[in-house]
Amino acid sequence: RRFRQHLRERLEPDLREAAKALDAVRTEAKHTRLLQKNIELLQKQKMKSMTSMVDLGCKVFVEAHVPDTKYVHVSVGLGFHPALTLPEALRYIARRLPELDAKEKVLSEKCASIQQQIQVFQTGIEGVLNPAAFLQQNAAPPQ
Image 1 (cartoon, helix red, strand yellow):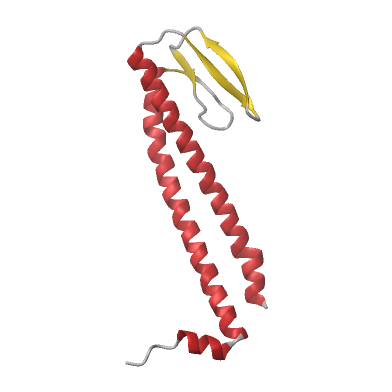
Image 2: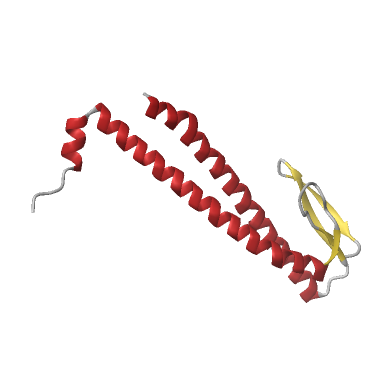
């Protein structure tokens, strides 16, 4: 009974929380790589101004005209969006992506560890509830 309670109240919520954090890190990394690609494209094509479609949310798009592409506002956390030159933004991205990749690796390992713990607990619960079937199922094959 305590095993099931631990499973429901501790491990499953921990897994949901870790998976949610992992998803957020992957989304941020995806957006950061897209920003890097777009900045590189702006530099390569030497665009001084541009027009773009901007998603306001809920799949509502508006046309936006950017008269000067010298600066880009980059989210650096805590709600701050400084205006950086394109080279400054690329340098920031070059530092940020390895951090995001490392965070993704740690969270992936945490999710895998919690999943493994859940599997162990489920196997243990199964063994306690039906020991004969558990022993028969997990018995070593005769040699």
